[in-house]
Length: 180
Image (tube, rainbow, N blue to C red):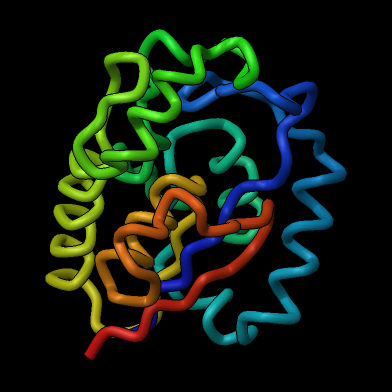
């Protein structure tokens, strides 16, 4: 079984912003470009037959709908981005450095802005993964966020837990998890 995790396209006017769960928009052209890029990395068989899940955020759902068409993707609340609490909607450079340092010291337990910790995101990820493994035995596609992908890569052993926060997850990138 393979799980293909795809990060959404870049949002509009969000550079330098901690947007977390905010519903930031993505240009239609970015969705089309990301979908075209996927066809070079995923087999036509996978794109045509694999179940496609998506975070309910519009920036993910738009891409998921495009690649699933004419089918519909299945929205999954467990795939939504980390909740950054009071940090959401603020510029990263406006967040107190001591708060960011505290997060960097304890990536898995610290709750940025009073929102969710990475451990809380991991619980959601593992719950979703368990449900998917019970329902499917072939390839599965999920359009989601950098935070969820970082947690999934760490929990699968692809990156060390201590480096999860630093893992570079480009917009529109695909990350394959091979599950036995």
